[in-house]
Length: 203
Image 1 (cartoon, one colour):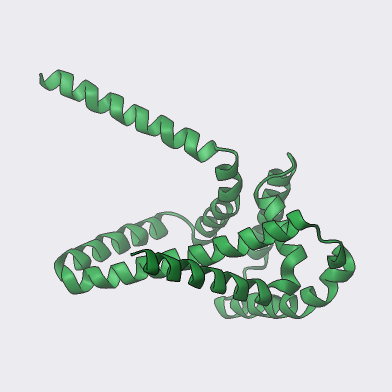
Image 2 (cartoon, helix red, strand yellow):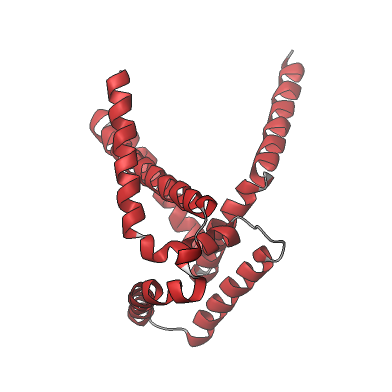
């Protein structure tokens, strides 16, 4: 068991080191993005939402086709992948990195690797469920996709995408400042109160 844990730790360290090497050119941008997403300054959340809202308003105004939208998005990614590693050191000055910044960059890469592992793990569990309990897998997928289809039918696609993107971008800050934990705790307490009240009525 201990040997398996050690192998897992070594593998995680190796994957993290590999990702750090791949993202080295993006280091300064990643650290700045991390500060924005974690709301290190009070004006970061409204600034972030303003940028997201402006981008979605432009998409709504221009109303591009799916093919045009995908092409422009991929083109933007390609330009960023080419320009950012070349320009970032000149703008931010990578030679001024501190030990704290390097440690934070390492933590971010480690968290990305762990998140990737979780996604792969969920994917494997889903296929394991398909093999072990095909009926449950079929019903779960059918119900989940039906709910998603119904939501997509009720809410405008672009607005729904805007809500999802906004939540994903705000999630790290909400989590960092304990807002999610606070409201999840409140919801649990309310549910427990309702259950206790129901039990008393039954008695």
